[in-house]
Image (tube, rainbow, N blue to C red; front, side, top):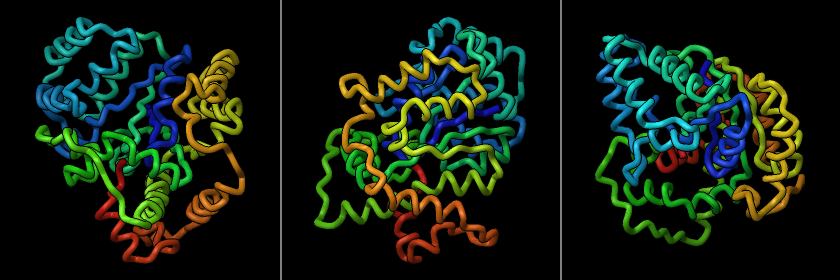
Length: 320
């Protein structure tokens, strides 16, 4: 079972991943990014294990850290254990599918951490849910959504997002593919009205993981960032229930306290919860989830004009 947390971006997924790693039953990976690369290269076909590991080993953050190895210290997994597992995997399995590799990796992580489930928080995986469903089997996905304007204001301060804009790429996957990314000058000056235009496109992006989850008939739950701030206890209880975790009142209480305290939570930074302020986002998602046209590949075409959808695809992409 692949357990995911996805979002259009700046919706509290990093904070949620941090809190999940405090749950006694969970080991949460914080950004992996290699799965689309593996599936692009190999699909569902049995593949040389060495070829799979080359892509995993070559998937880095822009600062050069390997994606998986950067996760291990917070999980209490040593590089010695990781290297030993890779050696045994290559020795015992000449060929693996991507799904088999992922299952064996999660078994290794559970064994080393004592966790009952592994959760992967990689926001842009929301752009790949249909492909994941085709090749990776059972999937549960939490989709975090947030009002578009504060989302884009926050994202425009995000060095990784500015990195993509400066280098003319749409997705984090593209960043992973290119090792010649220029990370020096990431300033961005918007024209008057451009922030609002980007926010409108961002709202369209927010619905894409929901659309893909519905198309692939996945088990998913859509939660609002604003709900995390306004009703944190209920928010974390819903997370426990969705992932079928053994309830931990201490974990729920401590996680909720982190949301409430601005000094300890990067999530609580911009605007207080207001039902009025987020009415439009709720209406947008509600209209989208009620949209039942099985023939349409443009789930937002009834909300945005065709030029807007086209521009959203070309400028913003699916993936933050």
